[in-house]
Amino acid sequence: MKMMSKGKWAAGIVLVCSVLGATTAGAFSDLQGEDAKTVEALQQRGVVQGVTQDKFVPQGKLSGAQALQMIAKAMRFEAAQPAGSAWYSGAVQAAKAQGVVLPEDVKLTDNLTREQFAFLLDKAISATGNYPMIKIYINVADENDITPGYQGAVQRMLVLKMTSLHESGKFYPKQAMTRMEAARMVLNASEFVEKHKATKPNEDSITYKAEKLADQKQKVVLTRSQQPNPGYGIEVAKVEYKADTAIVYYKLLSPKPGQMYPQVITDTHAEVTIPAQYKIEIAPLE
Image (cartoon, rainbow, N blue to C red; front, top):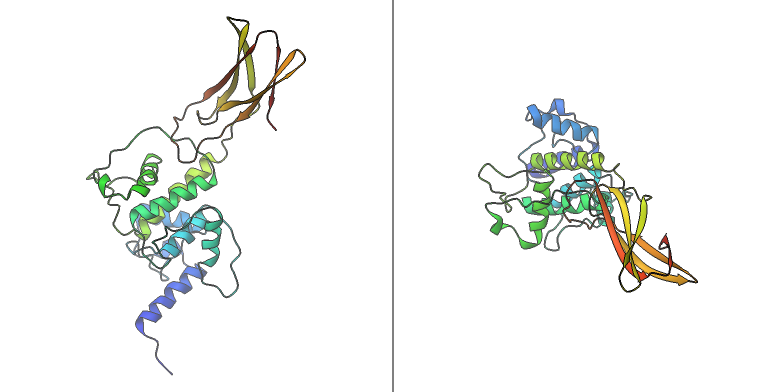
């Protein structure tokens, strides 16, 4: 019988463990302290497995396929696993359906850099909803080393505390992403989404007031009250005049993906000027 090479044997072990996930964090001899707790929390969510029965290999590199599988499971993106397909196919399709795809120049088998992983995780978080962000800018000592297309994602990952800078103040964007750091970031993202997902805007508290102006005009001010952040705005869509009544139609706005907003309860406003002789009604634009 032909002997299997050591490389193929090791790859087989990785594949089996990736698919079956039969290990527990307590069995990993190369993890301890907070890292062990992080991996255990992700295992309980069905997100990660070990490379062997007793090794997680925290400093191991992370391929594009592994990253997409980890992120898809953590964000609960679901898709059927095609029969006879590669172990990562279902996760890749689930992520793609949410707009989370590898950059064009990155293959599934390529090891990801820190900035590339930040880009993917940022996309995944945005795909689950719109969340409040503190409007600040974090100085990164090696910012010039970050690929321009990834700078926004890196900033958001730092602002949201998905990751942090090295004590040198650098992000090291071109360094290979490790399994352990990916695990930390994915757990932070999963907990962030779980915490904020339940926060919903109050879309029913729409009021208005009319203020008299000169030249037989009046200003109608619409107010959307008690929203989680200023991103939940309101705008006047159109005004219809029927007999002696002006119907002001409004649209409710949602935060723009990736936009940073102060995390404060906010009243947002919109206004329009109409002739003073009309009575006012307001209605949502259908």
